[in-house]
Image (tube, rainbow, N blue to C red; front, side, top):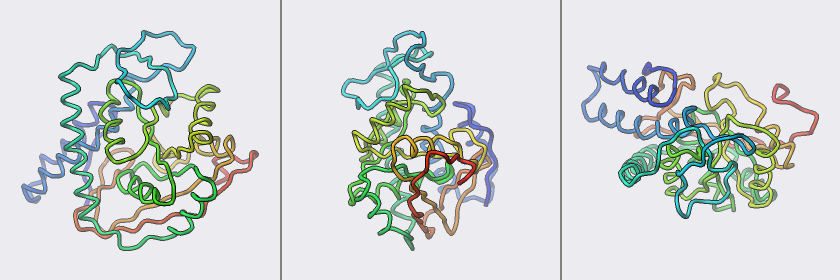
Length: 288
């Protein structure tokens, strides 16, 4: 079953994602409300990468943001500089705290009600983690919900999972959710590159041994187009790329660019860890 929606661009994306649910007369009211709630929760991550508050890399001019949160993780890829002027007020912080609790319970609901029927390549992935200490896990943007779950399942092998979150105020909520699930927060933007960003990534992966989860077709597509970021990081750090794939027996598939897949409760899930791949320096993304 598919649900149509718009192109994700900040707040407009949420309106586009919610609109189709108002035209589902055949849906049970409880299920309809549940899907509305989880869509709002999952949209938090999209807001975190909004261009309106995109970070400015080192060296560019910008106003010092008052967005920093006391005690926030230090493994940031960018200075706390944004084009937005929103501040982290007490009211906004309270809103984020409430939203994170709701989002966490919804994530746990889907993780607990959907049964992982089969896991392929788990021992191979654990061996790669033990050997490399850190690596570069990749999965498609549409598989974020259970892709994150697949990586968290590797923590017993020593994997320190990291998720990239915008350094803007809008990234505060997603950062809190990442910490809630027991992962590491990497404050930065996937739309900014450069020598400084690559150096900071190198320190994060090699020195801090944090493995950043990467959606190679994100943050805005095209769908299933493997962009060169993960390949560049693998070449720079010498760490292997670990592909992860998810399949579900029953899903809601949104009409967004990523065709986001939300497994329905009580669906059967298959998680597949691919063969870890070390990238020679002369290869590019198109050669994968």
